[in-house]
Length: 224
Image (cartoon, rainbow, N blue to C red):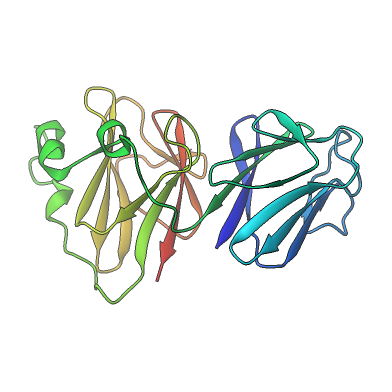
């Protein structure tokens, strides 16, 4: 399913799922995505969905619509495209887009690497041994929203998935019978969920939770 994230100054404000054939964007309350900003026209732009393809069309707005910094009238969107509307950014993605490149090398560390960065003072805490969730249930997915890996997805189909960089900040997403949990492992700063640091306790993740780690913003959702 196609989605867009409404962001301001790099902070995710809200997520919208493009379930309709046309999803309008503008300042007026009648729009599906209302952006109350003077730089946004009353009827600014529209997402036009044709099958799995989604087009963005500017509706003659005063300040125009930009895709990745370039003004457009109508254009087919690609996974990870960023649309600028006034001072706001709409990040676009399609669920199920393949993860490629060196994502696993730069952001995700495998369980074997995670063992080497577990704090020595907490030998009983390795989350890699967490029980595996029921395979028949939904599978968690983390979508990267910012940084070099923006637009990539990580399928959480292992008992534990480690995120971050050793010596800087490390966290683990543990797959358990009751759901997925985010756990701080290493670093002075703890990961944030919906803008709030999680502390030392495991934080259960919910659909559309916004995660921040090492300044990289991600979103968690589940796929059947």
